[in-house]
Length: 336
Image (tube, rainbow, N blue to C red; front, side):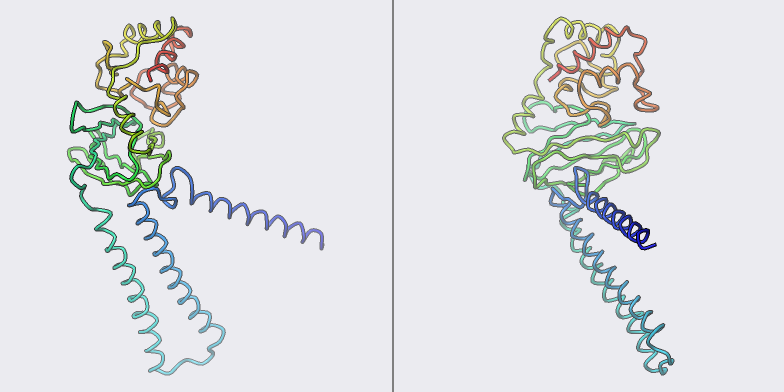
C-alpha cells in the first residue's frame, strides 16, 4: 500500500513536471507572443501579464470572500454591513481593477496602432490560398518580389501593406507584433519594429480553407548592413544553372510550362499566378513553410504536391520520370 502510494506520488510529480515544462515551452520559441522580439510584441506581452495579474487579483478576492462566508462566517451580517460588502466587493472593487486594466490597455494603442514614420521601409504582402507574395517597395529602383519569406532590419520601423485577392487571411508574426486581417478589396496596414535579430515564424491567423494550417512563412531579422546586402542580391537576376543536371532542370522548367505560373528573372519564365522563384534556393522553406529548401524536399513537392498540401492550386508533376523531377529539384535548389 505504502509502495503504491509512493509510486502514485512519483507519477503525479512527473505529470506536474511535464505539464510545467509544456507551459514554459509555450512561452518561448520562434512563434511565441510571450517571447517578444519587437516593440509592439513587447507592449502586447506587457498587456498580457498585466491582464493576468488583474484577473488573479479579482479571482483571489472573490474566492477569499467565498471561503470566508462559507467556513468562517456562520451568522448573516447586518443589512448595513452586508450592503457595504456587496457594494464594495461586488461593484467598487471590480470596477476599480477593471477600469485600471482598461486604462492601461488603451494607453498602449498609441504605440501599437501608430502610423509609420517618414522614410520607413514599406513591404506589400498579399495573402493567397495558401501562400504569401512579398514585395519590397524601394525608394530607388524597381520593387523586389519574392514569396513566403521576409527579411527585416533590426531596430528599423517597417510598414506592411496587407491585401488579399481571394478570402480573408490574417497576417501575424507573434514574436514581432499583433495580427491584422487581410480583407479582399481593402488594404490594411501594420507597423512593426524588430528589436532582436533571429529567425521567427509567421502564420495566417484566420481560417482560409483546406490548407490554412500550412500557410506559414519565416521572418529573418538581421543587422541593417546585412539586410541591405540581401535586398541588393534579391534584385539581381537568377544565377545561371551550374552543372549538367541543373541545366537540364532549367530546360525542363520552361518545357513543362512552369514559367506560365512562376517568374524567374533573367529567364523566359514570367508567370505571375504562383510564387516568384528567382532566388528560392536561398529561402528557408518551400510551400509556405511546409518543407525545407533542399533537393529531396523539392522532389517530393514537385511530384506529390497535393499530398503534402491539400487542395493547393499548383498541379502535381508526378507523371514526370524520376530523373526529370530530380533535375527540376536541383535547378530550383540552385536558384540562390
